[in-house]
Every structure is written in C-alpha cells, then in structure tokens.
Length: 307
Figure: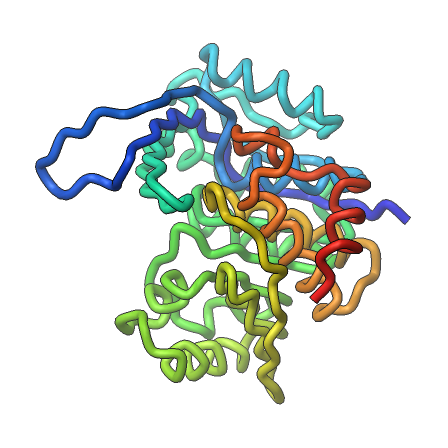
C-alpha cells in the first residue's frame, strides 16, 4: 500500500553557507563553503513522501523565473504531480538563507515571495485532488488562511506543521488531526518563553482539546505525543548529527507517509523520528534534499537503529 499524500506548501531556493561558529549581531564571518539547493518546507516534505514511495502531489506557487523552473523540474524528477502548481508572473520564487555552524546548528532567514500569494482560490481549484488524498499536509510558509482552507477541504488525515510559528488560539485549529510543532514553535503558538518541559506539556494539552494529536518534535530526544487523555514519549535513535537543517521536514514527510499507509499515530511518529535522525546524520550526503532517505534506506536504518 503506497498511500496518497497531498502537500499544500512552499518552495524556496536555499542559499547555504557554512561557518565555524554562528555569527552575533553586527558581525561578519568568513564562510568555508557555499551552495544553492532546493528548499522550502512544503517542497522538502513532498519530496520526502515521494522518496518513501507515496503517490504525492503538491499545490504551490513559484515565480516565473529560473528558480521556479528548477522547482518544477525537481518535483517532476521526484515523480511528484505538479498539475496544481501555479506559476506567478508578478512575484519571485521564495528564497532562504541558511547559515550552518558546528554540530549541525543553524540559523535560517526566508523571503517567501510567491509562496505568500498562494490563495484559497488556488486551493479550491484543486479541491477534488485534495479530497482524494489519504493525508493532506500543510505548513505556514504560505498564508495561514490558505493552509487552514486546504485542511478544511481535505477528507483524509489532516496535518499542520505550524512553521514558522505564530501566536495561534487553540480553537482556530479545531478539526485538524495532527499538529507538529517543535519546542520553540509550541512556545510561539501558545505565548510563553521556551525552556520548561512543564510549560511545553501544559501548552500541548491545551491544543489537544481541539486537535486529535499534538506531536511536539524534540530533536535528539524524539517526540512527545499528546492527545486528550494521555502524554507519551517516542525516543529517537542515537546518531552523530552533522546538520539538523531539514530534519523536521524529513519527520513530517515520513509521518504523512506512514499515516497514509495506515500506521497508528505512535507507529507513524516512531517511523518519522527515524527519518529525521537519518537526515540529521547526513547518511546520503550533505545537501538537504539529496540527504532525504529513500524507502529502502530508511527501512534498513530503522532495522539497525530501533530504540
């Protein structure tokens, strides 16, 4: 069973520079490596789902420029259906600057360009396709109202990856099956200073009154899964993290894949934790998109690193 995943989200061209340490305000540092790569949370998550064997389509906006053309070519090479991608002739393709320091620590700035012009009408034009998906996955590098409209259109499992996070009243997310913030994003949504596990758990419980499951990703500590009745922790495998950039995208793409195949939420979160760890370890190489695992690679990794 391959499952069908629909992603409504972003594409950004990534401009990545490597430094020996992250800069402070006002400081200029010399880098020791630079590259241009495919990025954007929606694109990364769609590619991950497709790599893991899901029938995958993406609904997005790209500019009428060389970077938009690169996006379309990449998606088609990954066997992602681009029927509902809109080429925007007024706004450029989104772009992101990623600064990568030691031990995989990173800083990211994005100019979302055409992504922020993906409209509810664009989604409605693809309504039949969205309703056909087993899982619909969205993020917040597109307008919030567009993400919500896509999820409300969906008839399958609905996942919101609330990144970049913004203050979000829990009741606005009613009817969504799963949200997947990290620790910082959960704090931004709920309006508290991150750092205390008790605050994190209490915030997740508030959101679990309105969504079926709050899955908080915790990096090397795995994930916390909160529903109306319980709090459970899923461990991540131990790896040597080389670059954590995109680990959340690997997690979300794998989570959607597993749910589309009928896994339980806890089984899907465990599967997704392994995908995130695989990506952070850069087992396939350094570039983010090329580091996303194929299905056989992830299955082998799981068998060798089961926790």
